[in-house]
Length: 305
Image (cartoon, rainbow, N blue to C red; front, side, top):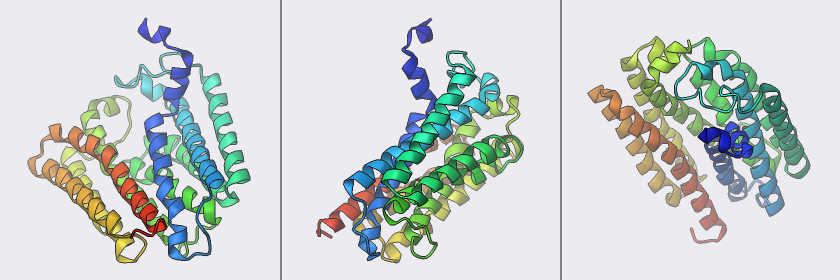
């Protein structure tokens, strides 16, 4: 009865996976500040371009999330933690969800293409197509590497941010953006596998081949340690190759080593009860990394570092 009394906008808002969408937006911010620091011939994102990039990125991520809910509604009905979502519960119809996702996607492309850059607009489109058609519709139900490969779609925030003010994503000219992409890509498996360990029975019941279901908890814990450890050189490379300063490096390396410690304890003890503390920390971790980088670049703009 309580859910029926909730305003309908809350159901639509829930479909956009607001926490994930906001995280994608946050990762785009420092990428918009970085080009000017590297002498690429641009002053960085102007305020109109920055706002367009942020709103366009949010609408793109929200669109992909709604499509994800739509394609996964049958899976959600078989999982205890998800069967109360708007689609499996019937509070929002599949038809309305489809049009909502479509409108969000079109608005995203229009904003990015008109007010940011064509490269940022098409990058968002490509990421959404990959997330919806490749990950959700195919990989998620067919391979244990689903979240590893699918993580590429959630890592495009920095690419959109960089492209918004440079209209370029060359591997050489835009290498800092690609490093940020790699950081999110490497962060994704331990983040989601921690959740998969806790809800292993749910994933098994829904026939989703997550790593703990197929390979077991021990292999999953070891893989999580490998991915978190690989973040150390990825995070450090921005400082070592001159794209960021100590204001970024010191807190980011501390946060990364703490992330490794969480994974190390989970692997060493074999206690699955430590998976959720790692999951919660991983959410804070990405905000901390990109927040430190944004602060470092803003101080650089102000001439203070």
